[in-house]
Amino acid sequence: MTQKETLAAIAAGLLDGTLKVIDCTAPLGPDTPLLKLPPELADDTPKIEIHKISEYGDRGPFWAWNWLKLGEHSGTHYDAPHHWITGKDYPDGSVDTVDPQKFVAPANVIDCSKEAAEDPDFLLTVEHVKAWEAEHGEIKEGEWVLMRTDWDRFNGNEAAYLNADEHGPHTPGPTAEVIQYLMEDRKALGWGTQCIGTDAGAAGGFEIPFPAHNLLHKHNRYGLASLTNLDKLPPKGAILIAAPLKIVKGTGSPIRALALVAG
Ligand SMILES: O=C(O)C(=O)c1ccccc1S
Ligand SMILES: [Ca+2]
Ligand SMILES: [Mn+2]
Image (tube, rainbow, N blue to C red; front, side, top):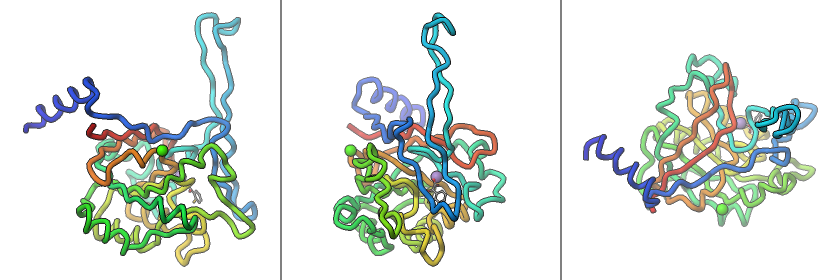
C-alpha cells in the first residue's frame, strides 16, 4: 500500500467511523488535580482559573471568551526535556522546538490495572516489560510506552488521585531500570502514565530522585501524565496524537491526547 493509499484508508475510516478516535484527556479546569510537592522543597503549580471576558453581554455582544490561569504541567500534559535539569541543554528540548514529527506515534499499552488496584505503590519492573513484550511483541524505536493503571477513575477527586498520607503520595509508576531499558535498549519515544506525573508517587525518595523525569529527559525524550481511557486502547496498534502547545521556551503543556484505534 502506498503512503497515499494509507492516508486515504485512514480518511475513509475516520469518516465511516471504523477508525475510532479515543479521547485520552482529563477535563481541564479549576477541579483538575495538581501535583503537590513538599512545601519546604518547592513551589507548586497554582490551581487552574478560568475567567470570563464576555458572554454575549455588554462586554462583547456577539461573543463569549475567557482567559486562563494555567500551569504548563496541568491535567493531561506533555513533559519536554527542558522540564528536567538532565534535559536542559537540548536545542530541541522545549515544546516549541521539539520536532513535530514526534507528536504522532504508535503506542504500547502495558496493563498494570490489577497490580495498581492491589498496591497503589506498585512499581513496573523490567521483568514485567519483558514478559509483556514476549506476549505482545517488542517495543520498537520511536514508540510511546504507556502504563495503564486505570488511575483516571480517581481524576475527579484530587485527594484520591494524589493518594497521599503522612509518608507522602502513593501512586504507581516505573522503576528507574524500566526507563533506562526503554531509553537505551528500546529507544522508545517516551513514557506515559495515568497518574499526576510520569514518576511513582514515592519517586522523590528513590536512589535517583524522580527517575522517570531524570532519565527520559536525559535522553531527550518525552513524558505524558494524567492520561485517561487507556483501558480503551489495545496493547499494540493504537496511534497516539500528543501535541503540546507551542509555548515559547515551554517545559511542557496541557494536551488533548487522542488515540486512533481500529474499530
Ligand atoms: O512533570 C510533572 O508534572 C511532575 O510530575 C513533577 C514536576 C516537578 C517535580 C516533580 C514532579 S513528579
Ligand atoms: Ca475508563
Ligand atoms: Mn509534567
